[in-house]
Amino acid sequence: MRHADRRAAGDASALSGTYAINLSGASIGDDQFLDYVRESFARFRIPHRAICFEITETTAVTSLSKAAEFIGAMREPGCRFALDDFGVGVSSFTYLKNLPVDFLKIDGSFVTDMLQNPVNYAMVEAIHRIGHIMGKKTIAESVESTEILDALRTIGVDYAQGFAIARPAIFGQLKRSNALPRRVAAA
Image (cartoon, rainbow, N blue to C red; front, side, top):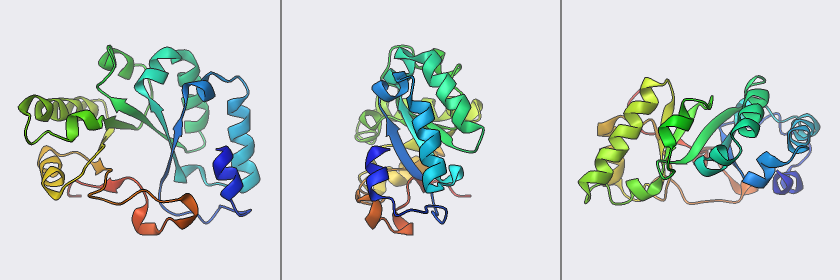
């Protein structure tokens, strides 16, 4: 958020699209962080609906009560949340039941070679299926080719991130077409 502060030009109320902000374990564990985020939203008039906070599975597991508190406080005004790097932790599905996130990000380590590795393909399918049963949208990370994008469409994954979609860009240089994540499945 501090980097976004430096780049913000006063009034962000006209933001369109969705902007993902990765949160660190240190941020989630900081007792003053929630107040800082609330103040930033007010100061820059950021529309809550435009922000999706990403919390890694490891951070969520390490600070489950703090993560749940932050998610609850920021979901109420309209922010959305993604559980990032899902599938690489030891107790993924157990913790998923206890976190009120909107999106489940399928870790790129499963996605990158899913076409060559049937186990990774099955993991992507399983994570997507569990996510949908729980009412969460799924996002595949590290989508590097149109072939992988086509396979994700076949599975039904909702969104994708990666070089096959768009290259990373500095916040101030983002165009509407680069807003993340991008829809994968047919509507």
